[in-house]
View 1: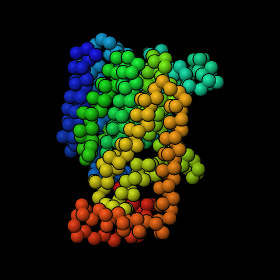
View 2: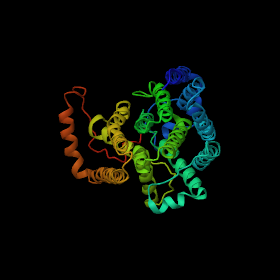
View 3: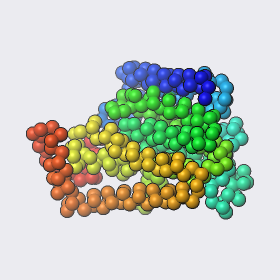
View 4: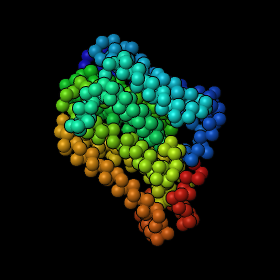
Length: 395
């Protein structure tokens, strides 16, 4: 990459961090916007203090500054992708400001953003890595709607995992790192620069989002992040002939798997697929930490600790996708294995929860005994009657 591109990457970090700091420092002037959303009473809430949801503005500001400073190379292409994110970012921002945009409205905005990307970039998914379906993908009438629908799903997926301090941001960094590593192996410096610019802007935001969150990514940031990453991936598939879509699915594994599981879980329970709950994988882990180790009064610790525990699980399929980027059969096998492991782990946790009367008391006793040396000395708690369905009541 050129010196100008490196300067743009540094500028993206600086602009993002500065904007995030500005949002955090002016909290008292706009926190009323969060209060009218009544976030702390939401069923999926995982924090204890009203927090600004304008972190997406910091990420987008960093990307805008970085794109402006890099006037050559892939900058014009990236600028088109960034501009195409405007509808979904604005819809998310309206939700962040308490205007109550329904999920269908935000998804429609995501579809509009992808339609703009298709028109301006003249790019869409060229193949799926499935012989029969790849013949259909040769027709733009099939490939374009499928591409738009896929990006809408990724936007929603990143919004759904935006439930813990740093989780969506770090997942975005891991995904962008995976795309950058693939582009580096395929010798495409333009795609490498795009991914690094996104990583830089996310890192500036994460300084104020982890371990203790002074700002949140918000719907504007989460939806826009999904849009930008998804279109970077589509560009990668269209520009790198040897890149298998199965490897790209591995790189996006965690948010996609969690979203598909949420849809299945809600449908089988007879609820709408967009109805929020507190049974996402990250919420399950946090509530288990509260019950078994920390106590329900320690959410400020359980929240960032959940992200720390999950990040190796997020990173593992990304690494597999990078290593198997041009090996379709092995990438498909790895994707199947990670999918089975994801489901098995979640179901094992649910089985443990359903048998809590028999299993959790001795498990709790052993874990607390082992952790007594580093937990606050002399602290006693009477948590024997807690269960996984009650752990989030005070979120």
